[in-house]
Amino acid sequence: MSRFGEYVICKNQIVLAHDGGIPQNDLFMRGRVVFTVMEARGTKIFHYDEHFVRLETCARKISIPVWSEKEILRIHLKALLNKCGFKESLVAVYFSAGSTQDNWHRSYPQSYIPVYASVYEYERSTNPIKLKALEFCRPMADIKHTDYLFGNVECEIAEEEGYGDVLYFDPRTKEVLETSRKNIFLVKPGGHIYTPPCDGDNLLKGITLELVAKVALEKGLCVSLNRTRLRLPEFFDIKIEGAIVASTGGVVPVQSINNRGLTMKNRTVDICRAFNEYREECFAKEE
Image 1: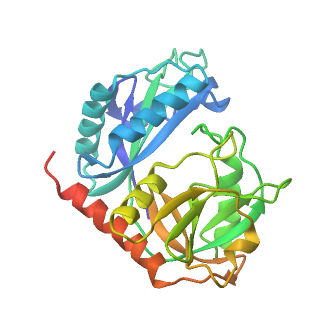
Image 2: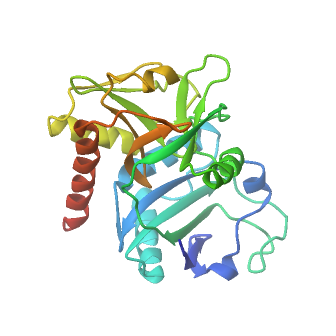
C-alpha cells in the first residue's frame, strides 16, 4: 500500500504535511490548477525537464503564472525527496492560480498556495493490465489539470470488478482516447506503433509514451510511431501484436478489454522490457 511522505512543499517551503494541509482552496476546488507527476528513485527524478516543460505549457494555456524557475524547483523537489526518504516514489507538483481567502489552512490563514508538491511511496507493477471501456471524454484533456473525479470514481468501481483501469472512448465518434491516467497504443505487424492523435483537447500528450516509442525505435523493436484514430474493434484484431499502456506509473501490456482477451506477442512484451531497462540505465547514471 502506498504511503504519503511526512513533508510537502507549500509556498516554496518544506513543511510537515499536517501543517501544510491539503490545498483544497477555492482555486484547487474550481480546477484552476495544473500539475505533473514524476517518478523518483531516492532524489533522482526521471526526465524532470520534459515534465517541467509540460507543466509550464499547461499553466500558460489557462493563464496560470509559472511560479518557479525550472532549476529552483528541481532543488526544492530534491530536498523534499531527501526529507521523505523513500527509495521509489512519485512526486506530484501543482501550480495554482494564486490567492484565495478561504481559511482552509491552519498555517496559512490567507490561503496563498501558488506551488504545492507532495511525495508518495510507489512500487511499479509490470503485470499485464485489464481495462474496462467506458464512453467518456475528459474535459480539456490536453491540459493536465486536477479534475480527475470521474476517472477516480470509475476506477474504484472497475477495481472492485477486477479491472486495473478504465479506457475512455468518445461517445460520438467511438474513437479510443486514453485510460484514466495512461496513454494507450497498438503494436501492429512489422513493428508499427499506432496511438490516438493529439489534435485538439481530446487527450493528454504523454511523456512516457514518447519515451517508449523512442526506445523501441532505437532498439529496433518498432519502425514507426503513427498518430491515427483508433476504434475498439481494432484492439481485438487477431493480426495485432498487442497493446500497451504507458504513464509515469508504469508501462505494461494490455491483457484484456471488457474481459475480452487481446493478442500479446513477444514484441509487445519486449517493448515494455526495453523501456524498463532504459529506465534502470537512467537512474544508474551519475547526475
